[in-house]
Each structure stands twice: as C-alpha cells, then as structure tokens.
Image (cartoon, rainbow, N blue to C red; front, side):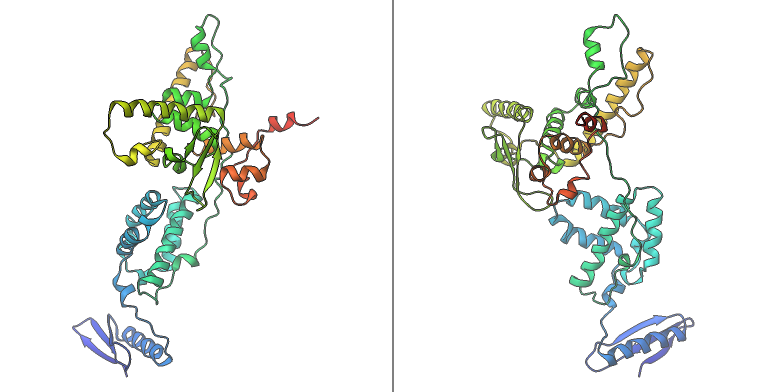
Length: 376
C-alpha cells in the first residue's frame, strides 16, 4: 500500500515501496494529487509496466540540448547549422522545464510563435531537431518513460520552394548617349558579374563561378581537396556528400580555368613559403561554409546599391527583381537548370548527386522563353 504523509502546512509526500522495484516518492500540494500518483505507480508496478520517470523529471530541456550538442550534433556533417538551431531552442522559456513536463500543447504553441517570424521550412527543421532530442533521451539516456511531444503536433507544410534563376544581363539599364564604353559594359553585366565585382573576398569569385558551373553544394566546394581535383581528366571527386554517397563531378572549361588559376597561385605561394597547416594547404578554399554565405550576402547588397546608383544617374527606374532575394544556394538551382539543357535527367542526377530524378525537379526551373524556342 502506498504511504501518504503530510509535510508542513501545504505539502503531501507520497511513497510507494514494492519488492523488486526501487522506492518511489514525490511531493504534491494536495492529498488528492498524492493519492492519484501513488495509485498510478503501484498499478504500473503490479502490471509490470512501470519504468522510472526520475531521469526525465530531473533533466531540463536545456540540459538535454547541451548533452545532445556534445554527444550527437558534433558528429554530424551539418553540425554548424544544427548548433544554431540548438542555440535557438535553448533561448526559449520551455528550455527551463523538465523534459517530462513538456506536452504537445507546449510544442504547438512554440511552433505557432516561430511561424510568426520564420518560414515553414525553418520551423520544420527546428521541430525535427527537437524531436530527435526527445527520441535520443528516450532510447539512449535511460528515459524510457519519456514520450515525444513533437510527434503529436501538426507540422507546417513548407511552401517556400524557390524558382529563382540568375539574370544573365541587366537589360533594364541603358546608359544615355555619350556614356563611356566601360560604364556601358558594366551596366550590361549580369547578376553574378556584378556580385563578383562587388565582392571584397579573394576567394568568393572563384567559389561563385565553380558553384554555377558544377552545381556543387556550398559545403562540397569549401571541403574540396586538391588531391581530389584532376584537371587533366576534368573531374572533381567528392568522397563525402550530403546524401552519404561519393560522386564525380565533371568540370566545364570555365570551371577548369578557375581551378587552374587557383592551383597556379597556390604553387607560386608554396615556392615562397613553407608555413601554414598541412590541412589548409590541401584544401582548395581555406574558408568556412557560413563565411561564404555572409560574404555572398554582403556582395549582393553592395552590387544592388551600385546598380540602383547607376539607374539614378541614368534617370531610369531600377528593376525591383534585379539583385534582390538572391542567395548562394540559388547558384545550384541555376547550374542544374543550365545542365538540364545539356544532359538527360538520369545523367544529370549523377552530376548533382540526387538519388531520385524526381528530387531534381526542385532545382530544375527552365525559363519559359527557352522552352518556347524548342517548339516548332
């Protein structure tokens, strides 16, 4: 029989002792709550389905997130991105609560709060990380009694698929008569040419051209090693990719020229100095993925400002879509669309790394005018 005793003026302690099980005790504010809890525990022990809740009741979500980051996240390829998600989850009020007290209604409220400021895909990624934290705690951290409240809530449907193509040239700026030829050529530059010119990074221009010529992901480019670059065969080998499979990427003439220039510069530098870590010497680009994104975003902003200034000088209205809402990952979209006009879909999957041709349709966005030219 459970034991219920009063502790102080406003507390009741319930104790359950049963042979073969560790003693259980918990304090409540009312005797009715103490009775209900004790009866539930005793019933579970009698039926042989009882599991300890002490670990889940003593571990806060914040502590679980820290442990998850140290034991799970750091071994993932996308550790940097997931660390950012974990940081966001740690900052929530819910992080202060024990795991056992978090219910699906709490997760639903957090989901709705996030959806006010972020796109569904972003919220979906955050919920996926939270769900994995609960699953790991239940399966590997001795919290078998813990349920996963994230599994019970409705997931937002991502509706932010992008169809952004890169403008090849800016036809909206036509300088008045008498403009210098150099300025006129600059006005006709496409988006990527302008971003490259506006970049303050020595590496970003090469990364941009390599991305749009090969359809490689940002992480694949920055982790590229010279030992995997074969300029004679015009092939780059990627031993580790996002989907876990290795693949070989063919290089266009422009991609070969970009890598050849980098190799020549590297060889010249190695003649003059022997300093530097062996790891960085073996990498084509000594830069982090997040640094590439930040550098690209800054270059786009500067390029847009220059473009708007030129339009004002020419007394023309700037194109609202030119150099706006342009992201680095759009280069992969653009590259896939360009390559799709050269290779059949089953061959294109070997270049881009998609296992299913249907997945490639997310990135394949041909221009309607290009399709129209193929019609009789």
